[in-house]
Length: 38
Image (cartoon, rainbow, N blue to C red):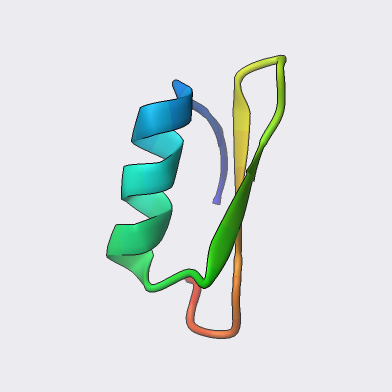
């Protein structure tokens, strides 16, 4: 997933996908990280 979300929405969305961690950029873009991430 490489979408622009708020920090909280990024964290919630990544956890829901099973990601082990996430990166949130000050531009508002979200990147989920982990072997289980879709």
